[in-house]
Length: 205
View 1 (cartoon, rainbow, N blue to C red):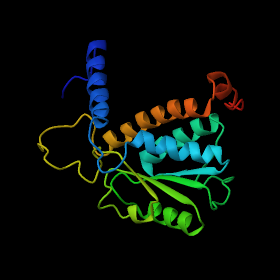
View 2 (tube, helix red, strand yellow):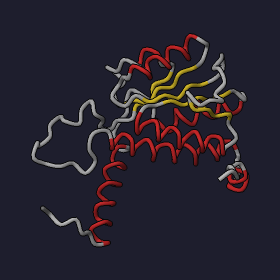
View 3 (cartoon, helix red, strand yellow):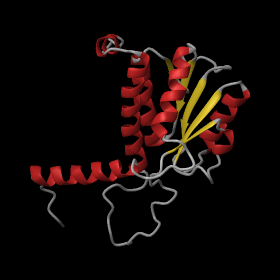
View 4 (cartoon, one colour):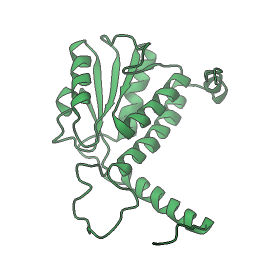
């Protein structure tokens, strides 16, 4: 059995490899789809200016990334809600659903997007499979994140190798980084200062 002891240099090297792999996603072309950052900032700033609501939904680790984004959108002053929370209001015309289906389709994401559309909501879908995913048919806006997911993580792989970022980790990590960029740029667009953003953080901790 190999030793699990890691030096600080080992950890720094591993961290650099992980960060570089995720960063490389943003060098990939998204043509014919617009850049993900531009699309998200445009859609969310429109929601904020119209004082509409934004709803967020994803499954598994993708869902965790969307929960993190939801928190920051609330800090920015948006009316942001996670689907299935007890206090989530109904979606209506003018509202936005931000959903993620990295591999292209999940039955629950399909269903939630369909319900949002049928009630007049606008659907923004994040995905790594914009051409083949089952969820795309429900989307008003498709945000293409060109990263590996479980839809293609076994493609062209040496079966003996052990990937540093397995399964959907590259896509999920890319979502986290993308959302941090979105929060930064959206804060600029909305004119939200760091002090005001911080003042909206809960004190019930």
